[in-house]
Image (tube, rainbow, N blue to C red; front, side, top):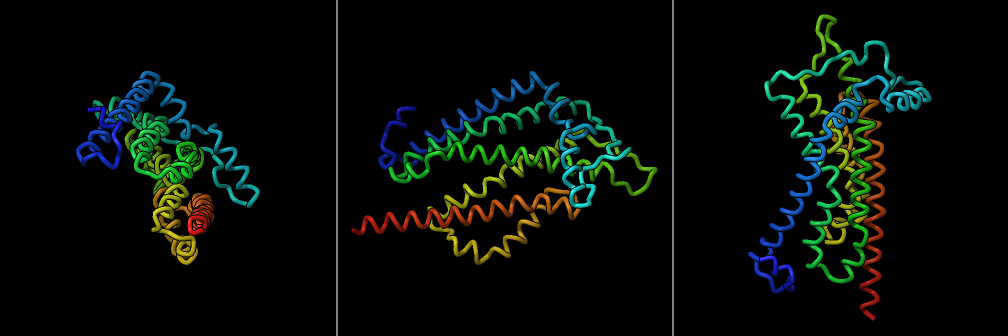
Length: 279
């Protein structure tokens, strides 16, 4: 069955394409599982250092965010006495085991993201023209870089800001913060993955421009609507705090402006190619 990968993509049947796709998915899944197994073996480091890192007052982001906010006369990220006074608990029999399994799988997806992209690229690249493959050179490296940049932003910026805000927010002194482990890990996971995929915006715009669904004129025309959408996204992935939402919205807006430039570059290059072929 694997011999179908040697066929001309234009001569392959629908079932042949499905067979090829199946093997790409199998290899991607195996990569995620292998990384997840390693993460599970080193789960103590994974949880105590990485997952619970933002819950410690000496987490590096708090000092950096505090120093930056002090320049602007704010106290964002500054940890006061009792600000992180909460505990993380497991109230289910298999709570910690399930947390270890699913966190390891998440780590497998994040760490294995470049290989998943590689398998995806191997599947779609045979259907591209030579010039399209040439112009898309570096796709895996750039997409992986943006994804990891986004996950780092989510982990070192969004997560500590969210934890600091939610842990210090109280409706009454008699109510103690005792977070369930699933809720805590869910916050970290959502912050990291959401930021990682949002940072893929330039790559998405590149391919949308290549297939003619998006133009730089369109992106400029609807920039003000994009600003509203960005603010809504920032509000979804951050706590209801204006300054935190602004901190998150700024890099997303920068990515949007980069996407406009990328779309303009793609259109100009396509126009140049058409003009040369016309001669």
